[in-house]
Length: 451
Image 1 (tube, rainbow, N blue to C red):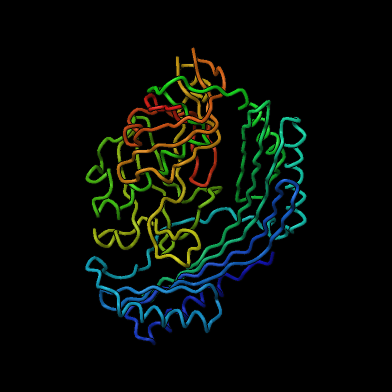
Image 2: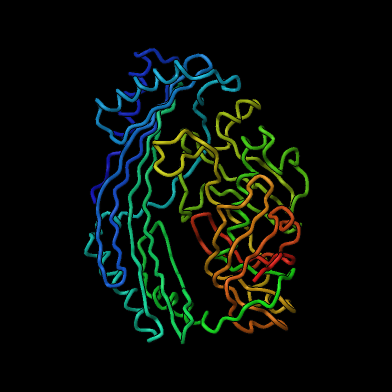
């Protein structure tokens, strides 16, 4: 893969802003993203390799209190200028937003980019296919009980640029590689699954991923049904514990707070969680998968506690919410998916939970009866993000009796409320890097578990 010139992207964003002003915008902002990627996959013996580039621009314009937005899946100059013109036409028919003040001004403060691995620029499709083949074979060779394996590895180099008419003109770049294996194990008439994935900003060796996934599937065989619905302690491993943070993110959004849609409204500086729980939004984590020097509006990112020793310390802001309160954005403007297609919302960059003193096994040894949840949870996206109520299905759950894992369980539905859980949880010492940040195992002592 060839390195993209970030300065050229910033220059193009600046030209789009100037063109929007010529078309009549009082203010304008251009956001450009460009990604080059290679992806390899093997599924049931079928091999697939794809290589390509996605690029596009989103332009936001302001006419009084009216905001227009248009996007185009191209960075051709003629097409992006047309998008600026379209945004003007949209703004003219949009209703006024009385809460909108203006686009963000430049902010001068320290910030840091994530790790950029130049070694990824030299990777080829053949390299990735070789790596994917190795981990798939690892899984297949574990046991004849493994009847199906699919997996793949992908690498990407990402760049984005933001410019606006108030003086912002910045950009940043990042690298990423990730891969995973999904396995099915069969014994008698029972079929169980196992999964493992790893992602990083740096090139690394995937050896062992296939073996882990296969053993997880095999270890889930012999599952028994939970006898009845019970209120039990649930120990989430450091892969599944992210459910609590994913639900918490909505409540921490200043937009949700200002619109009275957050369970954390008016709770700043109040105790909302277990006294030893500290959660940091660490936007400078060098190996963080989302680490970026600037947010999606070009504001320098920050490191700040959101919960400190159980006390709510910060809401997360973009410029829209920060200006309403006379504050500076916390650098949490975010654009999901293909970013250029979205107006900036609010999101944490990288969560970091300070680890506890006990390992997962040490915590497990304190449970007389409960459930250990590993590897996967289904249905998180259907949770009630306003109230914090959740009901998820653990497809790889294990029954704990007398401080020992006794046997695997058939899929179990687990229900509770994230805000109640935060007040009771115990944090493990085992940290895992994921797309949400760095999370440990977490024990929630009282959840409804249904067979």
